[in-house]
Image 1 (cartoon, rainbow, N blue to C red):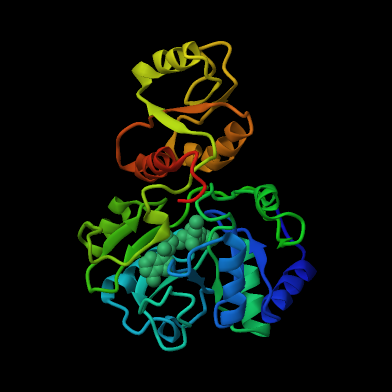
Image 2: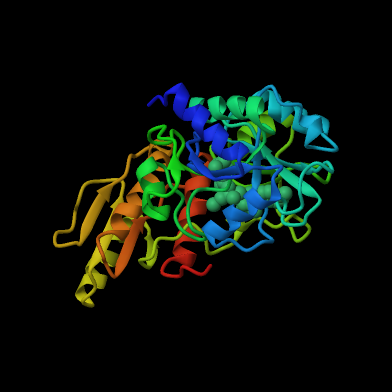
Length: 328
Ligand code: TXA
Ligand code: MG
């Protein structure tokens, strides 16, 4: 889906004047503000209901000079940029003095990402002409909710008062991979479409697991990315039994599985694609649709093991931990 030039120009003007707009990226829709304008960034936290100590990702165009935002860029980080930007990878690096404290939640590091969605790129380039060119943008959902992957989802979260650039359904459908390179070595903070294998091939070693010293990241809380309806995961072999048992207990049950309905009488059944990219692409739209069934329980067939499914498994286990709890 293309967005006309005048709409991009208007959105860039809103950003330059300190306002918010929603922009499509290849991962999820973002709630965008001028990263160098603390009052504008404060509006993001207010609208999302997000705690002030949860840092935002700063989005930049491919032409941006990374050294303006990152004080130290290890060799491995340079390689990841060369391999995966523009694309679904965020790097956490030591920040420069330009990056306002409100953007980083008071931390001395900044998350940087160059998205590949053509509308995001057009907006970043236009905003580089009329403003700072740096866009702070968390996912365009209320804190703890499922991320939006269509313009309609953003509208459902925030209503008609917010300018939304409609770039169609997001290609990836899950938030970017986050790699912390602020302490010399690569640490995987959040799995995503750029897999740990792909990262290892580029930097020559597998990224480390996050530990107690890793920077805080709200998308890494156990309870996050949750629908309102309680959600449980069931192994494929136990799926029909879990559904039957819950319905037998008087519950209205909605289901997400990699096959068509195999139990009758459910309150909703979404058939997910059998491959990891397809499953990820549809996941948040499926969770939103199942949430709208007003069921008592969402049962999700456990995705397969294996590296390609890591990001999907990560989001589903967080959704299971946080479902039914808006205050994560
Ligand atoms: O794909 C994405 O990353 C989307 C699109 C819009 O770019 N954005 C996104 O933003 O998912 P958000 O705010 O929903 O999640 C960003 C994650 C949060 O978990 C945040 O804590 C973490 O990135 N993060 C940002 N800056 C950080 C930093 N300096 N150190 C550690 N984590 C950081
Ligand atoms: Mg988010």
